[in-house]
Image (cartoon, rainbow, N blue to C red; front, side):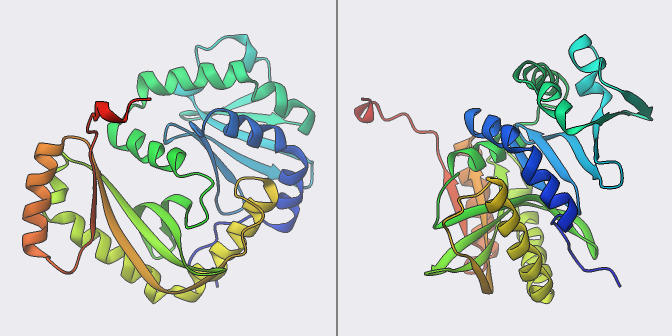
Length: 281
């Protein structure tokens, strides 16, 4: 019987990734976290500004990696990427790489070129806001964002961001962050149903989520995607927040309407881009 959720790598894939992907983890940090690498069900997704740039899988029997990239991100960026062995699968290009080819494939130039394609064809304001939240809250120990676009085998609806909030020393609660821009009409009421459903999903499958993400966090710490010095045990009591940014006038109006319907049942964090010149340095 398959587990409800398994966002971690098999032992073989985990050891290969530890061996081969330190350079990419360094590039992610150097980018200021514009890029993001997330562990899935025995594979990884590379993101740029919140858009899934490529799927990275490991073939143990051949000691090779398969990189699956949508045509719209890979085509038209020159021979630097097309010189690698590849095949076609509907809307995707499949690149088969030995470990020694990973560094030139994910070169700074290739990442930049693919990123430029993302900006042209995959730009969504809310996704970019989500990525900014992840980047600006990296390396904290009180609130650790551990995953994005979370689904499980019982539901295909996606939680925007899943974090761990520190409760006591070494003990953390799941914290769901539903991200909305101030002009999103879902703020007026639908977001309450979304967030309540996500909280219930984890509460009803708490042990499965706990086991999954304690393993996920351990692997990320070892790979270098999360600070290694933080000891984490996940405990019960699932939290949920709506994080609102931009379009303050529309946002305030929608939040007022939302709180009027669900006064004590929903927590909203409204982030405003207020220019305070007195704080200039």
